[in-house]
Every structure is written in structure tokens, then in C-alpha cells.
Amino acid sequence: MSEFQTVLINTAGVLSIVSFWFFVGSNALPKRQDWLIKTGNIILFVGFAALSSAIIARGIESNRFPLSNLYESLLWFAWSVIGGYLLISRSYGLKQLGWLASMTAATFFLYGSWLPAGQHEIKPLAPALVSYWRQIHVPPLIMSYAMFFIAGLSAFVQLWKTTRLRSMLLALAALAAGIAAIALGTFTDMNSFVLQGLFVGGSLSGLAGAWVNLPQQSTKKINQEHAELYEEVVYRSIMIGFPLLTIGIITGGLWANHSWGSYWSWDPKESMALATWVGYAAYIHLRIHHECSAEKLSLVAVTGMLLTMLTYLGFNSLGFGGLHSYGRFR
Image (cartoon, rainbow, N blue to C red):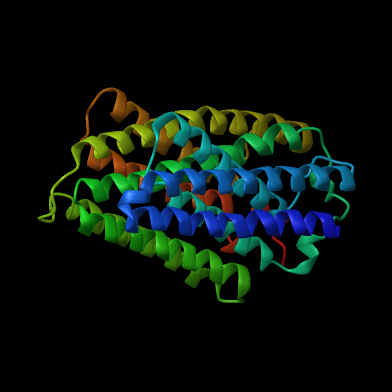
């Protein structure tokens, strides 16, 4: 990787951290909140421009579409999270999502920087990836994952605004268990069954507790206007991500038929992508037909966020194997 790329990527990562502190400061200094949020958005936009330039430069240097390994996919994911947040923030004037979006982007920059050096270098494509289908199939999936993460982050804010603090904390614990399992699977040689148990067990127990405690509210006054705003952001983010996921699954089937002679093989990652699609289809159905409260829908969105994380990163770090195992870097 060239020094120019490194500078651009590091700049984007640093600016995402700087913007995070501006967004945090906007909560601590209400009188200057609007200025701090506006400045944070500007800083994040500059980081977005730097990351866009880095991805373009990497494509030019490699003489191919720059999306072929975990490191490059993390760059695209961070790019999609930042871009998705800036787009939605411009439409809705959000005041509580910026620090979560910038923190997510910074976390994925950090995750990518800790990957083995071989992931950072530009290398010839693995045989399974030498196809024009790669640039058709993968980008919609990465962008859908980013929009689902934005939906999940907004769901946490919605639970906070409706004072479902206990449910929010338990859902956050489920997310933390999933993140811990993926981090351990990436950077250690821990037994795969233990990691899978941590992810699945931690997620299920945390979400179950969140559902059971959903009726419990704190004594804090509900900000109904803000709660409705973030519930709408959850819905709009999923409505952007869902068709992108659908396109990714369809083109994946076409690529599989081109490469392996079968549209669908029930590969673990394929099956998990389908489960994620069904989860978000259920959310859309429940939302449109008003069959659940906004708080329950927020927990459905958090559940979808965990399914997305398992589909995107879990199968390459938790040892599930399958036809997509070439995505592992160890």
C-alpha cells in the first residue's frame, strides 16, 4: 500500500475520532450544540472525502475494483456508514446519532489497522474472486450492512428516548458479546466452538432479557418527539438497506451459478444472509401493518444488527467454514 493511501486512510480515521468528540461535546454544551454538531458533520465529511480518495487511489494502484479482502471491505463499510449517516442527518437534522456513527466508523478503522500487514498490501486476487461479478455482488451487500448498522444505532437511541433503559442496556450487552466474539476470533486462536457459543449465547440471552424487560421504564420523562424521529430513522435506514441486501443475494446466486454451477448451495454464509433478509422483511411487515410498538420494532432492528454482524464478519472469524471460507485471512 502506498504512503499516499496510508495518509488518506489515517486522516479519515483521525477525523472520525475528532468528529466523535465534537458530537459528544454537543451533548455536554447545550448552548453550543448546533455549532458543535455542524462542525462535527463538516469534519466527518472531510474524512469521508479522504476515505473516498483512498479507495479510488487503491483501485488505481491495484488496477482492479478495490474490494477483495477483509481490509478493503472494512474501508468500504466505514465509507458507507459515514456516507449513510451524513445523508440521513441532512434529511432529519439528527442530534444524537453522530457520535454513534463516528464511533462505529472509528472502530472499524481501528479493526482494519490491527489486521495482519498482508491484508493491507495489494495482492493478486484469489481465484474465486476473479470475476466481474465481484464488483456487482459485494458493494450492495457492504452498503446494506452499513445501513442496517445505522438502523441498529438509531434503535438504541429510540429505546433511550422512551426510557427503556434496562432493555437498552441488555441489548447493548448482547451487541458487546457479539463484538467480543468476533474480536477474539480475529486476533486469537481461541476454540471456534467457544467463540460461537459466546456470540450466539450472549446475543440470545441479552436480547431475551431486553424483550422481557421492555415494559420497564425509568422515571425519566419520555421525549416523544425525538423517539418518533429516531423510530422513523430506523425504518428509513432499513428501507434503504433491504433492497441493497436483496440485490446482493440475487447477484450472489448468479455468481454462484457462474462459478459453481448452482444458484444456491445452503452454504452457512448464504443461509445466514437469507436469515438476515427474513429478519428485516419481518421488520418491514410489522412496521407497515403497525403490529408492534415502536419499542418492540427497535429490538427487532437490534436483532437484525446482530444477524448482520454475524453474516458480515462472524463466519470468517468464528470458524463456521463453508464455501466462503476463502474470506478468512489466517
